[in-house]
Image 1 (cartoon, rainbow, N blue to C red):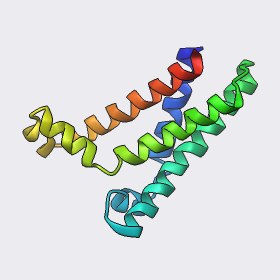
Image 2 (cartoon, one colour; image 1 turned 180 degrees about the vertical axis):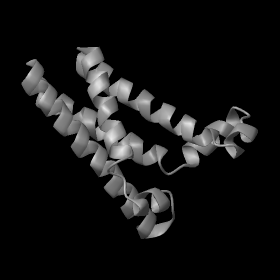
Image 3 (cartoon, helix red, strand yellow; image 1 turned 120 degrees about the vertical axis):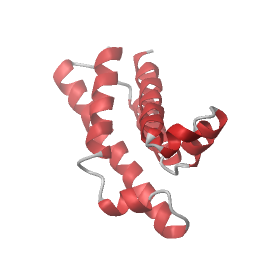
Amino acid sequence: MFADLAFLLYVGHLIADYPLQTDHQAECKAGPGVKGWTANASHASTHVVVCALLLALGSTVLGWRLPLLPTLAAVLWIGATHAVIDRRWPVAAWMRLARQSTWAANGGAAHVDQTAHIAALLVAALFLSA
């Protein structure tokens, strides 16, 4: 069940992060003030909705019996971690700590960002599998 959950959550992540993310969200989600936080919250909410829908679909098609509260906790975890990671400072801080400033300057931050998101998804999948 873990592999199925992880795969569905990963597909949900890709759908929410690429085809469903608006230009406004992508440009403003790490910005200051209400504009930045609103863009960030709407983007993270998209992740919550898409992942919840895919978990419901998986439950229906594959016959899972996912308990409501843990499932709710998992999708909220996905939304919250996505929002924090997308503020960009955690990725920048990690890359400074890991002494990856050259890689950061040459596009590496996007890879570290996606790795952080996938790690959070795997935590959710492990939690739901337990």
